[in-house]
Image 1: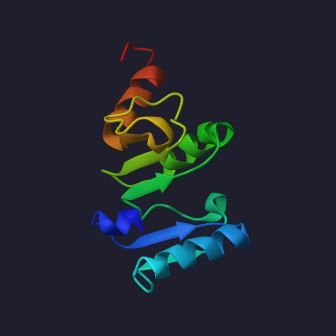
Image 2: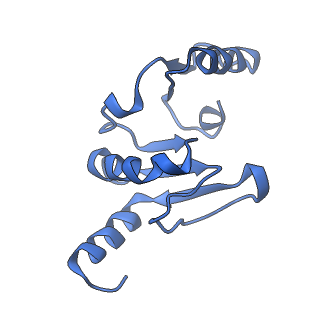
Amino acid sequence: VEAYKQGLRPAVGYELNPWLLCLSNYRAWKAGYHGKVSFLKKDLWKVNLSDCYNVIVFLAPSVKPPLATKLLAELPPPPRVVAGRFPFPSWTPTSTPPQGLEQVWAYDMKEVRRAAQSRAEGSPV
């Protein structure tokens, strides 16, 4: 819902937990965004993200390293990724507003890819 409010369209969420899926759809309806925001029961690991230019994730830290690999492989240029609650451990964020439980980390994937390529080539970032 927040992605849609910020002008990111289409706004599609993926969730496997049926309770969280229902809660997300309810919150979208309650906020007046029913039909504008979609939440689908799909496995993020099986979804092709090659047409996504903005990705927002709320996942546990243990999932971030394999997700980083998936995002680097699938996202087209020039995407942005926003992580809520937990950052990607090997990426440098371009911004981190606000603090506390609402903390998010925004990543410019062009910069993340450049840093990953430099590490792979063995040169300093």
